[in-house]
Image (cartoon, rainbow, N blue to C red; front, side, top):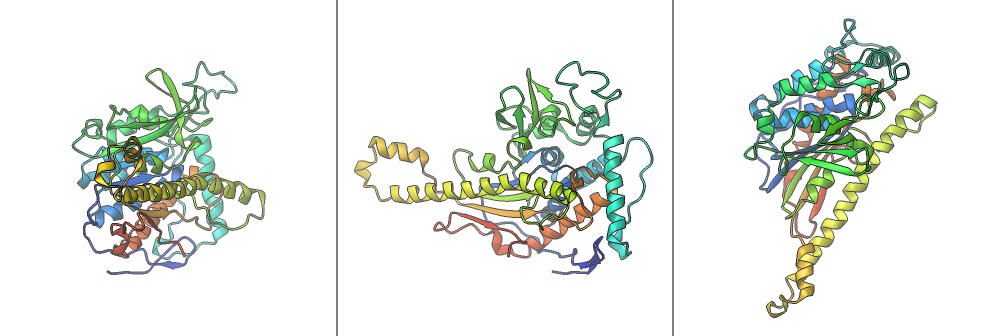
Length: 400
């Protein structure tokens, strides 16, 4: 392992060049990459994937919601050797303003020093530009806006038009590959606007098209509902911001290693003004669902494992009993390991961090993901298959 110090935007030195040993994880039936929603923060997930690939860890299932679904499309829609390159092209594309030339936020990676307030102000300006101009290859403002010209249906009832995103996905992701059962499995979550029910679109059960991924990230009122087979869908993060539940409720249950990459931290400072209140409320809103799902799945897995072990004590001549047969459908001997990576807020960020798409901020998010994943992989025992006595374990490099 080698390290070299670099500087973050705050000017503090960080060891972002931690190099993990390249190697394969212990044997699991499923290695899943689970990607949460979080808008512009999603560049962190791309960095995590780069370090995973660098360390020789390639998922056979990727599940995403919102921006996580878009990253999932790029990962699943390309051969392993091209995924990082295409992720970088995707993020470079959507982090360009479509109208006026981009202004440069300071890149402090090489040791420059800027006051935090100045960086925060410039970051806020970049977010304002996203609101007023949109982002190239992603979304553009509706002209005239919906409060001037009433929408003519659910597909136009939004402040922005996401038609450019379809072209970006079709250019950077091979949908024949996404739907090829011999490659990587893909699941993305969305919400049915009419029923309010959550829906997963899964390449193991249906053919996925660009609109399935666009629907997963169609957050109202900014983005319009996306029509799929006669129904309209919004962003899956409105109901659940993590697809972990989808992966861990698959039948039959299998030994599974999950790399769960979250973009909102449940831990943060007390807010002291209204802008900090807005930021902190977002963190809690979108991270709490992840905590609830993770704890719930831990309890379920431990109960299923206990039932599995108890059933082994039943004499063979009693195993045709209806009660045994019912228990058999509910028991599971599967072992689950969740490696949890959570984006940590930067001092200059505000409540707009999920729609601040400047190139400099994107690059710093990406570097953070690379650094966190490299640091995680310096703990190779974290990838070990759990002991049956503890069938569900979690690891987080930030956890104290």
